[in-house]
Structures are given as structure tokens and as C-alpha cells.
Length: 297
Image 1 (cartoon, rainbow, N blue to C red):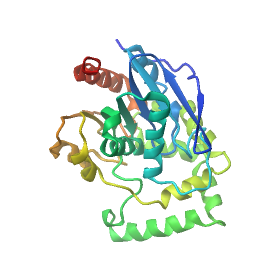
Image 2: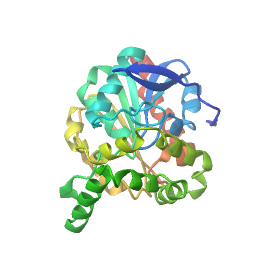
Image 3: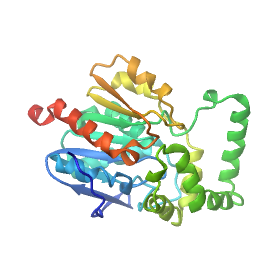
Image 4: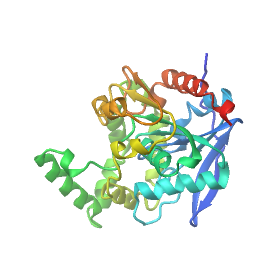
């Protein structure tokens, strides 16, 4: 049985474009790079890293600029910025074909890396991958489109934005939000709340939040999939209200040059790796074994 551990992860520091970026690396073997989603960090993979490393892989995880313990400069945050952060990290620390593993926005970033820098990838694992950094206006009904437009203006306000952010990041509100997206409420622990809350107290966190919410959504999975040259494993928590499984049909109907393995995970929400690691970890390890990756190098 693949057992999990939540022992503290050793954090190292990489300086990228003058900014300090935490990362961790554990194990030996073919490399995996784990990429968290919006508002999360390296710690969101605490239930997965020991298992994947124990299965014979060298596991890297990184905080995206603006999140976790990474620096939070007042710049424009885009998916292209983070895509290039991942590519540059690969150049600096890995430098051999890698399987990129991402949840939510992290999944979209991994898909972008695979599409735009295929020479660095051996495969991809997407967990409830986002369809964009933000909703595209045409995806929303008119009343909600107007509401979201007003909300983004308020979030960006120097006067009201900090007050709104301070309300959103409070622990009771964070818990209520996570109860919406985690089917298993027992998985919403104090440890998880702290993982999200503590970085939100950093100087610059509110500006990052505002920048992300007003940034362009980026490319769609449908635009990226025809460019993918490596196998994909797509894992999807079926009870996700943020990225409903109905939207995952693009992965089931696509005709890429390499295979896509689609695995629904019942009774699980938006973050299956954290909520249901007993299903996710074996699924990833089994897929990596079938990939016969080491034998191809």
C-alpha cells in the first residue's frame, strides 16, 4: 500500500528575476515537478510528495511567484509569467525530461509548458485543471458578467480593495469556501487553513490577489491540446463545483498525437490530491509505471 506522510518538507530558495522562490526536492529517479493552484503553495502537496518520492521519483515542488512563501512584488501576474517561471526553474534545477503535475491553475500552467516547451517534458498530470486564470466574459450569463466586472473593479481599488481582501482571507471565511469545494469536510483541517491564511498576511498579498483577478484568462485547454506531444493523465474530482467534470469533456473528445488517460474520482472536489490522496497517489504512480519513462531515457 502507498502510505502518506505529512512530515515537514525541507524548503530551499531559488532566486528568479531577483525574487526569492521557495522549492523543495525529495527522492531520486525520473523527475516530477508539482505545481499548486490559486492561493495554495508547496504545502498543498504534503500528502503526495513522500509517496511519489518513495515510489522511485525525484519530486520537486515550487511556490509560484506571488503565492505561498514566494515574494509578492507589485507586478502584473499572468499565466505566461508563471509558465516561464516553471521553464526557468527546469533549466536551473532539473534539466532532463520531466513530468509536470498541476492542480487547478497549476494544471493549466503545466499544459502550457507542455505545449510551448515540449522539449523539456516527458508527460503531464492534470488534477481538476482550470480552463483559464479567470472566467472569460462570454462564459458567464449577462447578470453574472456585470457582477464580476463590478467585483474586479472593487478588488483593484486602492481604497476598498484592501478592506475586501481582509474580509475574504479571514479563517472562518476560508473554511466556508473550502467546504464548498472539498466534498469531505474532514479534509478541511486547521493545517490546511493555515497553509492558505498565513501567506495572505504577507505584504503585497492583496495586490497579487487583485492582479490575478483582473488578469487575462490565458489560452484554453482546447487551444493547447493539439500542441501536446507527450502522454497526459487527467484526474478529476467528480464533485468539483468550481471546475465541474462536464467541462472536462475537452480531454475526453480531443484527438491529440499522444494518449490521454482520463480518470474520474468519485465523491471528491476541486483538490483531489489533498482531499483524496489515497485515490490520487496510486493513480499517478500506476500511470507513471505504465509510461515506462525510465526505459525511454
